[in-house]
Image 1 (tube, one colour):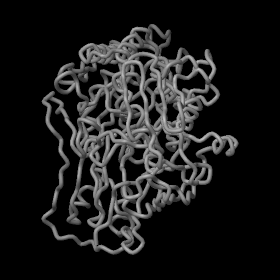
Image 2: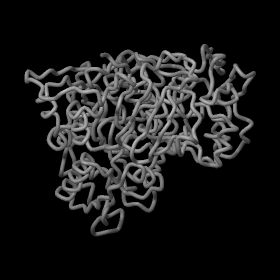
Image 3: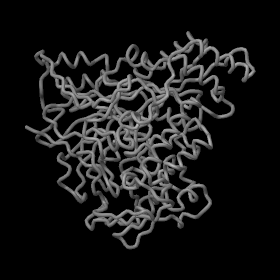
Image 4: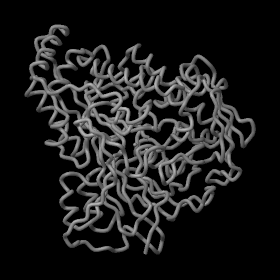
Amino acid sequence: MTKHTPANQDSFTSSAGRQLLAFGAASIAGVIVLMMALSWASSLTSTGSISTDAVDVTNNTLTLFLREEPPQLNSSLSTDTVSGSVLGHVMEGLLRYDEHNRLAPGIAERWEINEDGALFHLRPDARWSDGKSLTAHDFVFAWQVALDPKTASEYSFILYPVKNAEAINKGELPLSDIGARAIDDRTLEVTFERPIAYFDKLVAFSTYYPIRQDFYESTDGSYGSDAHTLLYNGPFVISRWVHGANLLMEKNPEYWDLDRAKVDKLDFAYITSDASATLNLFKDDKIAYATLQAENLNNAMEQGWDIFRFMDGSVFYIEFNHRPERPTRNLNLRKAMLYAQDSAELVFKVTKLPGYLPGVSLFPVWLQGVNTFFRQEYPAPRAQLNLEKARYHLELAKQELGVEEIPPLVLLTGDNPISNIQSEYYQQIFSKNLGLDLKIDKQIFKQRLAKMLSGDFDLVLAGWGPDYDDPLTFADLFASFNLNNRGRYENPEFDKWVRVAQSSQDVQERMDAFGEIQQILFDDVVIIPNYERGITYVTHPQMRGMVRRAVGPDPDFTNAYIVE
């Protein structure tokens, strides 16, 4: 979802055209290669032992971990991948992603989409976890909640393809004018604001999940804040949630496809972003899955474990604050910082994370273009490390800002080992190359998101993963109307090309628009790309069926099962 990702941490947000664990990737020389899932087997004999803690055959339970406390399980407000992964196990939209990363029927058993709108036919056996029927009215209500200006949903924009949605969100029309109506309990009719080429991909996203009105109103504003303030319609329900400590999911007996979930319980018994801690838990047979970082990869190989890798589709970058009162609104200051750093050095010499690619563009290498990969058809403009040019732009920035020295800049970052390494690298490199004073503001994930929303930063280490399988999921991120544009960048020309990509039915015209957007992002130095993330991980040999996604809940344990 993704969604904001916990920046620089050990996993991120999920797809037609891309198979499980396989994504198109480009080397920094621009050559497109296919990065398939790798299994590395060490020739060393494993010193670990397998018990039944991580995998409980008797109780059909998997014990796992979450890298963060889910910040928000109200689907109309959720923005991050941790919450998205949890919601993806306990909720379901009109469509969903199956175990092969393909769009599949969810609550809608069939549908028709044309230029003017869509018609979704809901399955008659769709029910909420309290046994009551799920109806088309629940989708209409959920979408109205997300669009209500009082909700202040950062993802309201993803509903804008629905007729009148944007005007409703701006307070110009009443909620009742939404272009979605329940013809009857089993039929949902959607009218489009304009023709859209990817609506089927949108409705699998969490903002499109249903919410039942009577239950929502009964929570008195606390919907999604705890296990008992959520009503579920997915394969699992949350039966226990000890905030900051653990979360237990159990199979939902009211789910329409009971055979889909193979295990009875998913016990997220640990919440930690410490890669060494999770590796030790895995080594001690306490969890069935763990991600790896550079510092513990050798340890994992010494254990003789099979190690897997995939590109998770996400990109990470330095996002600037473009608000008028911030020094980083100055283009020459941003250009100076762009030319004073090197993403290849960050990836290969500093963080040394397996499977990562140096950042070049907001558009990752796996996105499809007209005939092949987008970045192959529209090569990203690049800024090589150039200290002479960096210092030239710095002097211009000082003149334009009317200062002899740039005031200290606040770099907002996550409070975890990887973020610490990267933030300290940028603090050092910008001091050494430009004489800039960066003050590092470390925050836990939830607080970092809050500070990003309020604009309490000059720069922030941020990341973005795809919400749906289309370049627009990246392209509209810095549109003026997108509340996930935390730095409040505004450019009418940028917005114009986003609108073209949103409304055009012509593939070439849409890709040309994305090309223009990519160029503007570079020319205006809206961000400094850091890297595209690869995930390296290990799994318990008795656990099978875990699905990794770039679009959708990741990791997804819905289809996971235990072998004896």
